[in-house]
Length: 211
Image 1 (cartoon, one colour):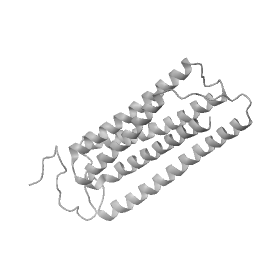
Image 2 (tube, helix red, strand yellow):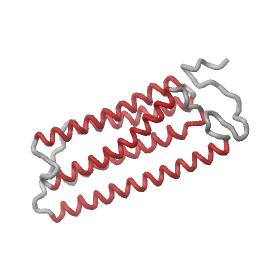
Image 3 (cartoon, rainbow, N blue to C red):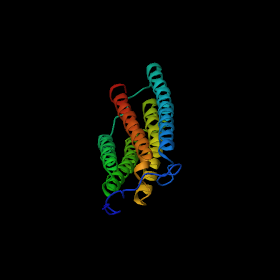
Image 4 (cartoon, helix red, strand yellow):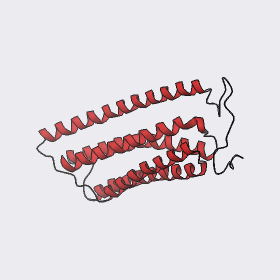
């Protein structure tokens, strides 16, 4: 007997030729779509890497030639935000494990928690920017603070795209429209999220050791 719809994936017969589950197409179509999706992810990762590489180059050059550079302190909440972001990645991996095991309810719970953690990180970034302004570090002030706002804002914009992808998967899953043949969206979203977490760690190292 299949398990209940609310607690697990319903076992289905093999997809008919040319058809599929939830509009995914047949097995060969799914494989081709999955490869195309991962190719798109690689292109997106490469483009994002180029953006932050260019910003880093500008940061290093400006710091090297500037006589008015003064290090911008990192508010303590930055480290709390970092912990939240790392937890979000762990939650996504827990969700993906549940998806592979066909545990629908657990997947929904873990994925929703990860999405909420991502939103919490962005709210925390707002707190960081507010604390810096209150301490007298403005966007148009010292070059160091200008680059801090620029780099963290660029990361936040990319993270908004990541959250949009997480929300899309979450809505599909909560509506019971995410079947066994639709793992690609979850995998792509999670991997891009992990990449953005890596970018954030890189930025922290940059600000901590080359400010």
